[in-house]
Image (cartoon, rainbow, N blue to C red; front, side, top):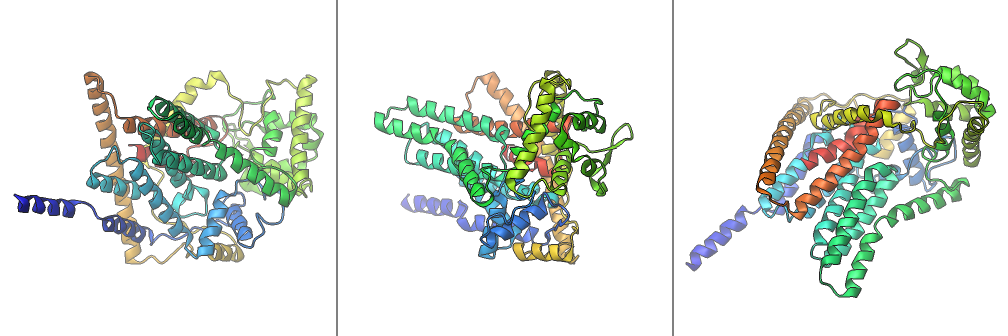
Length: 531
């Protein structure tokens, strides 16, 4: 009998996945993506080129570098990540894949109550790890914050789920999950200030966690300490914003997190309240409407030549009526470039004042009824109109489908562009070989394997959706209550996906195509993890 029990115990231990299995999966993933090369886009001065230059400045101990009108257009989270990888001499793409693997492991830790079987946890980790979205070169093989944004949001989701689940029986892990949620939330904010993405999920998680702690029989002092620890999670956003403002103020004289969400928003926002002369989808401020704006704003009128007579034709596109114009995706950057070309952005303070002067002059024209205007508006997207609700719902459904179907996919890195000096800077800062790389038989094999994985995941996602619907229908019929872990995963994951997809749908409806692979990377990754 004893021998039988011992034998079963040894068999059970052999059947349990060993940490070596996890390491083997990670090494297999790294081998699979090793054939992909970094695409250097030197021409993208507001994206890849901007990130690499800011990282180079940080590595040199010069914060974001000498001020020029593009210095503060984005948050510094991703340049800091590049600089950290450069300091440790870890190739950038390798660092991003390792970071994603760590985030996937944290999700598995948070889901332990839902996945008590070690074998199931290993399978779940494998499914997360080999998510095709992480091998889609338009996202994963560029110098773009989309390379780490999904992993960062995944860490936030794991910490929120862990916080809600552990609060049902508060112990030493509850404050740890609260601390992890606070840190990951602050990091997400330093990557991209998207309140629509994080606010719904964070608020729901905190309400659930505090409510569960309040119902548990604990000493008053301990209960109060845990509630305070949970309630302080959003403070990380305030602290990170204040810290960034102080840093930028000390270097550039302006307490600001980024130009796009503050100064630019104050200047562009009032333009959207002016009744448009022509209404063209995705061209929110048309050439005909700009004529009215020039007449109302002397500051904007001084930029007219730089805006309307651009020699850089790549910013222009053709409207449905055949007119060459600026769509909503580029208009704000056209105005920013015009301000820089006119010499009205020699300092951060002057750039801020120029944008705010444009906004104030348009608002004054609205108040004096020299322009026909709507309510005051501050933002880089048109104001909300309730009449758009049906269209927004349809676009949101389209976006949710796009996060699942993985149609915009490539396993092979495009060659990129840029001068020799720019490409050398990319190579130096990332420690990566640039595309195009050698087209060997091994590289082609890896590309085919990744493409096959993509098709497999599409099949698995379809099966998972059907299984989820069947199980939900059965649970409703039998009136079974879902476990807290399942409830937390579904609720928080759905909120993260839905919040960002709605935001992208509104941009897609009003300003520019929002459902591109880069913009969808966060929603797609979370959506696939959710299923």
